[in-house]
Image (cartoon, rainbow, N blue to C red; front, side, top):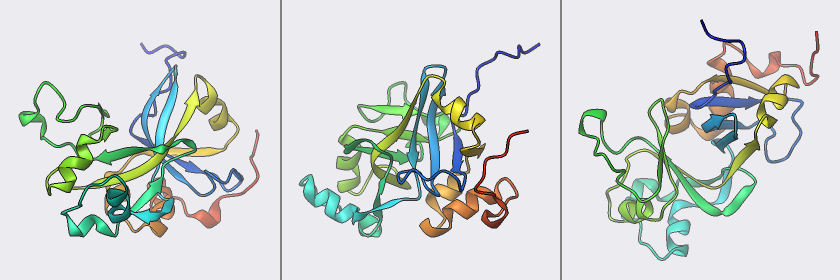
Length: 199
């Protein structure tokens, strides 16, 4: 029987900011959680585009992006931590059956639930040559919580949580991702109160 003290694990979940969360970095944000354990949590905001696109980013790092369908895709503001560092959230490069023992890229986190997050430049180099993962979200910076910090924000009604749907990340227009994530819970933004309720 599971004990009541089993740690909460929201890996491969969305955090959806409640209206009362005024923090500029997180207001009306949807965060995809790549990792969550008793040590803390790490995620990427998936609905806050920056003012640069992938074509510009690749020029800055002196790579030519030979996948024109990606050029106009925005680089996202993934969160307030390490905003000069790139994070690539992507579909797995190999299906489970074909997956090699070692990751294709130097630094990839495999997220239980099906996605991967790569922080090494080799994924961008692969994209520059026309290969690499097909569906990607590139962000600068990430969101992080120390041990117990996310749990206390959840207790304060700062966030709603729901199992992640990759279609919200890769197939949904940016301006609709907040509402689409809420729909996974059967909710609409107008039904949410900005005031935290405490029973």
